[in-house]
Length: 73
Image 1 (cartoon, rainbow, N blue to C red):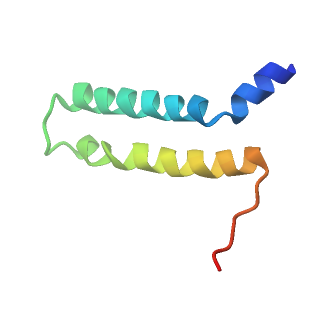
Image 2 (image 1 turned 120 degrees about the vertical axis):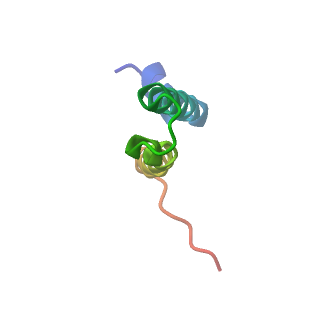
């Protein structure tokens, strides 16, 4: 990878856009799969999976950036 590619992977906006796209795609997938039926078991995961992906994304971003967690005084 060149320097420009590595810098783009560290940018917050890049990962935020990836998160938005994944969330929208997942919600659309669940709505199509369940046909909007809220009693379908797949519908239970409509918000849990994107939430877990955002939490995982925050962890990965922290690891990539190399910043240690800050302690509050």
